[in-house]
Image 1 (spheres, rainbow, N blue to C red):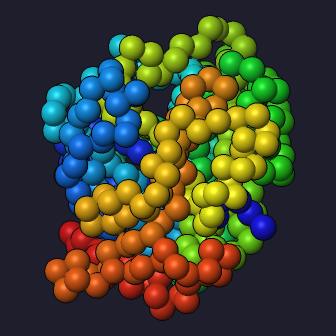
Image 2 (cartoon, one colour):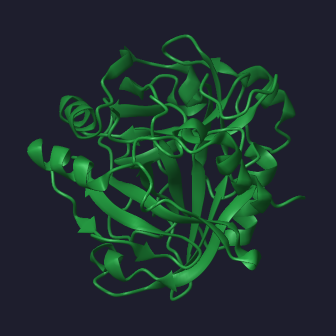
Length: 347
């Protein structure tokens, strides 16, 4: 039994929610708007200067498969950018992995500017990089776990590249806390797929994978998990969110979908790790609801965990999926998950 059932979403701090949502729709087909909500982030004040700040957030998915994007904007202040561009190996989320079943076709079809050429990953798979207007970097990779089965599919989020300072310590954390036991590669040296400015820089890279067992409510939609850890060996990395708030500009967290939060918390505590935030019961997020918690990896990167209790299907008709009393280790029927596609935003 997997303790996490996929990547639910990655949090992206922005100053214009609608602009970023449009870019994600047009670039990666992340177009099913699950919620669009305004509220105070009261439980996160430990990460927002011990003050309660308000925000607007859109959660959007690609219904072909994969996790979504939680596009997050302060409404009580302006989000602050990092003082310098993020480098590979800086401590935090360096890039988000986006899945496709054909990297070459994805590269050809993507009209957005700023994409790299197609290169090879350390395990000899096709990949390319693209950055949005705010220098958030996305790595498009191949995956074979899909909710739909079209000949060509561009999907949503399947993982992240996370900068670390101590590889052994970080590998142990992700293996123990979340059971990402499969090591796809562990390589050290210079790499072509990190972009031209880094061709002569040395890194150690470890890719961990969790094969989805498709037993949780949304596991068929979310698919496999890939966490790549990268350590810079030629320069001293900086912490991406040093002297900034959670919610400021950039990738603010990675969120795992959790079928049973009590079971996960018990396992995490048994391994010697602790939640830093825990809503402890259903937290009403306006259009949706669930129990959410946070944990920090060894370098302070924020990992969110959400046990979903309520999801809007067609809000104006008052139609919601209520999951609180369902079996935690049983996937929802495909037709029921497919109802989330009713929230697609067309261009």
